[in-house]
Each structure stands twice: as C-alpha cells, then as structure tokens.
Length: 362
Image 1 (cartoon, rainbow, N blue to C red):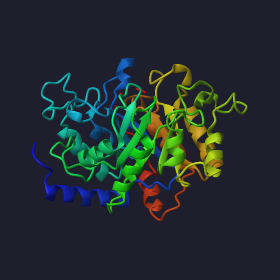
Image 2: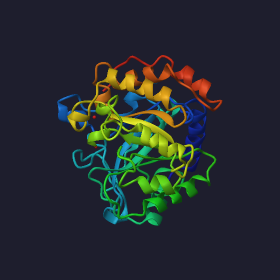
Image 3: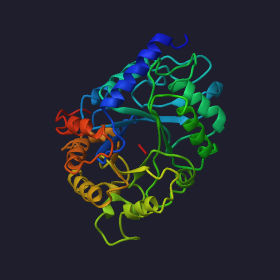
C-alpha cells in the first residue's frame, strides 16, 4: 500500500480546520453525540445502518463516534476494526485488508469522514466495546493510533488521508493496557499539532466507574459520555425518583465536577441513553419524549458541567418515531448556551434540525 499523499493530506488538514471553525463547539451545552458502526437495530428487525455519510446532512448530530476499534493488537501487531455491515472483510471479500494484518482498508469511510467533517461534525474513533481485546502497551498503541488515523505517517491508513478528530475510550472491562498512559501519550501528540483533537471516555453511570474512574481522575479527558443505561439503579429510567440509591445519579457526577475530581476541571458531561428498546437492557430504555424532558431539566439545573446528550446507537436513533437524535437536539436548543465566541454560529446552524429520516451494541 502506498504512503499517504502529502498534498492530499494537507488539503484534508486545512478543510478540517475550516470545518471545525464553523461547526462543533465543545463549550455549548446542547451537543448531541451518537455512536455509529455496530448496526444494532438489525437485531430488532429494523433496516441496517447506512454508510456514515447518510447521516451527516442532519444538523441534529454534532459528534459521531465510530465504533469500534475492538482489538488493540491483532495479526502483525496491528489493531482490528469492526463496523458491522460497513467495510467488513469477513462478509465481503472485496474489502481489502493490509498485508499481514486484519486491519481493513476502508476508503469509502475515509471519504465519508471528510464529508461529515465538512458539515461541521467531529468524528471520533471509539476504542473498546463490550467484546474488546485490550491487549497492547500504551507506547506502541498510541503511536499506532497517531500514525494510522491522525497526522502520523504509515503505509497502512484505514481511512486514507482522512484525519479523525480524536479517540473515545469505551473500556467495559479491565484493560491489559495502561489507559492513563495511553491518554497522556495521545495528549502529547495533540500538542504537536495546530489542529484541535479530543479524547473522550464512555464510563458507566455508577460513580466512580470501575474501569474508567482513574482515567478521568488522572488524565486530561475532554468529554465523558456517561452510559445511563444497562446499570440498574442509575439508569435514565430512574430519573425523577428520590435520590440515590433509588434514582438516576447525574448529580453525583456534577458533585465530582465541582469538587475538581477530574484532571480536566472543564470536562463536559453528557447524558447517554439507549435510542431504542433493543439497544441494550429494555428496562433501561426511556422514550424520546421522556429523554427530551430529562435533558431539558438537567441542562437547566447543572449549568456548569452539562455538555449535552449521547445515544447508542445511530441505527436505532434514526428508526425511532420521533427521531431520537432530532428530538433530543430540539429539546436542548431551547436552553442552548455557549461560552465561546464560536457558539453563535453553532446555535444558528442547529436552530432548525433536519426533519429527514435516515436509518444500527454496547
């Protein structure tokens, strides 16, 4: 495979810088993040997830998390990706794999990533998932992530010259890799660039999270996409009930924020939800209208820490009636505030979310 083309790489970098100036603003409290890539709605007999690009004309979503890079060290020492029905060499022999590895070459996804970034969205690569193999060392793996997906150089570029906007850590079991060191390494790489990168985490809602709690306390993390589902007492379904241990516990995360328990004192906290009854434990599911009401109340109450909504996953969100993502975005825009000067552009951009319906587990 050929090396990344330098001219094309620079054009992509400039385009990404321009799109970020017009799009996502981390300081806003009305952002919507959605996981894409696992086609989970197919298990509910719903249409398969569409290619990434199909969702990016809709202003409802600000952050798309590609899920997952699920094996840190596979054949040849390279990581392995899985995006279900999209770019899967095990089901489609025409999907190329880099020699000596199980690392897929997903050129179409690379083009879609750039398309979505030009629409003002940021694209993060989520690492982990429920079935992840977390078997690498931090130094090797962080260098690989930088080289394969960001501004480093490698003959093996899964998305060609497309540059992702950062990584998300969704570690749902004990890691054989030092994730704190990994995060610190990535933040050091980020400092070498004029481009803005992010590192995020997806903890379970019990505070502190068993697998990511120390990471949040000891490494700079920009956003936490808290999974208020599949965890029993702190699920969204408990919102509005008496306080702990009987109710959804965003307030515990907010108290930690105010007590400066996180390395990044300005970390933004997102409320995660299942976007469909079959996206996880059905008992954790709340409908789009309940979730919208919950978001509005949390946004108004927790004015410092609150960043927006997260949902699992895109295939369920876009097969809900009403559209789960659009419904959440409309609810959040009513109380939208941004502390940066970029905020005015974002409020205008998302004031009237697209009503087009488009068509995917943790």
